[in-house]
Image (cartoon, rainbow, N blue to C red; front, side, top):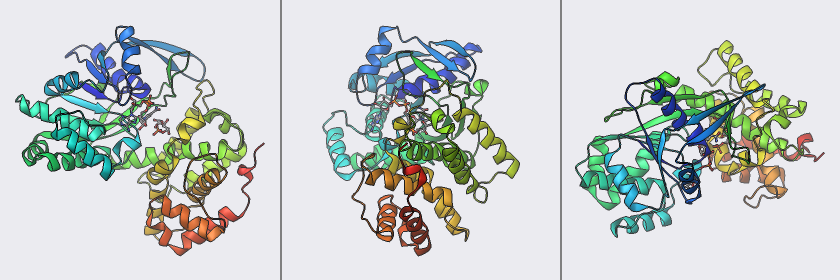
Length: 410
Ligand SMILES: NC(=O)c1ccc[n+]([C@@H]2O[C@H](COP(=O)([O-])OP(=O)(O)OC[C@H]3O[C@@H](n4cnc5c(N)ncnc54)[C@H](O)[C@@H]3O)[C@@H](O)[C@H]2O)c1
Ligand SMILES: O=P(O)(O)OC[C@@H](O)[C@@H](O)[C@H](O)[C@H](O)CO
């Protein structure tokens, strides 16, 4: 199998699932991993023969595991290795961050020109088109592309991006991709902060829910706990709206209060209260029973509170506007569709983002001063039709006009 976006998370998640599957015997799989943008991670991994240690850090103790499932590490700009690999693998997994899925007409046009000229393009979707073209040219059959980033319907979205770019390049290639390549959506979960001098640290919890076909086979990831389902939607909504939205809330309210990590924010009763309010807003819109949601809340609370994991709030706050559009605003939209109010905790997260932008803590648009204008501009910037919903604008305006206690630096 191959991987695009060699970073901390791939090594703690998909490579680890493959390692555990290999350990159970049966068919042995190896990963040829490619970096997304810079060669550094590939160089560092090659220096250790691609083997590395994972520090699995529980609340009380560490467990060290050596992972050897990654067998090749390449600079993502190595077109020869990329094409050779894509011509033969059965599976490609992808972790390129939320921003890696964005379309941008100028960049897409440039990527199509690069593809037409036989050069390796820049965006992940165009790279995949390049690899699949090499596969078709050498008579390769179908394969699976598994999206592993924190977006809803990530596989379907990546499939649309790849299909769209291929169609602009070569309709026959686009048809072949449509017929033979399976874009698998998946919900991934394992808190893995950016590595430090201590190495690659992750938490004991690891889950992976996948929906889609694997026309050329796959590792037996289920032995490591992966779940294969028909529809990932309920799982992705629960993960993104509860855990990831919770992270964004803690980052946006915790940073201005002087906190550095998720665990620090979890020791602040004000942050914890706001997290509870955010999660209360999910009850009516998630397809899980109150008991199931309570269990999930307890489990995520304990994971966030693991003070031995140093998960920086600043890392989580990167690309907050994009993340809120995935983790928070869909909840507000769903609540409004059901005739409910917007959800106080959800809007408080949006207000905290607006305050962070206005305070210069985060990059973002110019947001005007008057509460109603600010609320409308903030919602518009987050690409939401909610800016046209007067009740939501009024509720957000109320939150941004009252000095928020969490906005006061300690
Ligand atoms: N770290 C976690 O706890 C975690 C958990 C669940 C999901 N994820 C998903 O995995 C992603 C990566 O996390 P990570 O911890 O490995 O980060 P990382 O910074 O260690 O690695 C990210 C990789 O993606 C590549 N990349 C980033 N932007 C890209 C772009 N625009 N085009 C091409 N490649 C790009 C980078 O070059 C790098 O290879 C997250 O953004 C998230 O979507 C992470
Ligand atoms: O990785 P990002 O930047 O999409 O989001 C930051 C965190 O919310 C995320 O990494 C979680 O820790 C992870 O999704 C847990 O599985």
